[in-house]
Image (cartoon, rainbow, N blue to C red; front, top):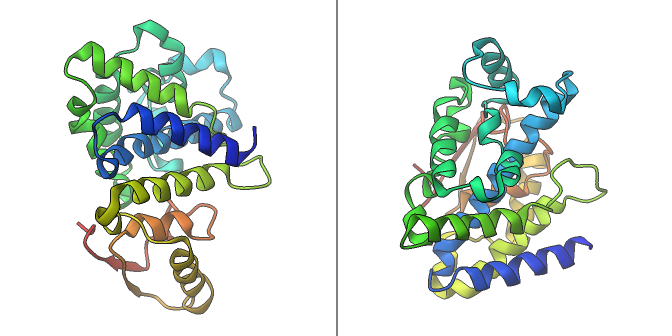
Length: 247
């Protein structure tokens, strides 16, 4: 399955699953889970590169302060084994909506202080808004389980000759924007505008110590930047980006 087919499959299923939830709201859930998977997989890859094997992953807990600090120092955050995306998948019927709430709460308290501006609050919808995914705990659990199984096949390891994650992320944003109508401008910057802004920042303003940009949909600039490791400092360090979505 190529990236276009995978993106179409995810969109078709997600659009059906959102039921009566507005497109501009539902995007926060599916994109939030996609980004959580990305961070979770990134931590697993980091650990494996540093001699952690699958048999030792269950020992990854907050009760090991030395490991917690080492992981936080190197990737900016720490996720325990119980809260890894891959663990959610392995839990099967034992998975519950509370697993997500607990995981996001733990993620927030385990962000490296130097990365607070990057990661703090990025999963607010998953932390406080899961009630919209079902009237009962069982209904929410089924909806979330369907979501995480829907996105589990998105490759996050960067081994492909193209950015599958970036393509699917952008494709979903565009389709949600189309369905959101007038509200689309609150969260979607067209592809061409994003590329132009990224080009200006990466090639024409790269020597500046401070760059000021106004964009109502800030995350699009960050997501489309050519820098492969754009979510980590120092990418954000020299930028002052302000707009409707800014804190």
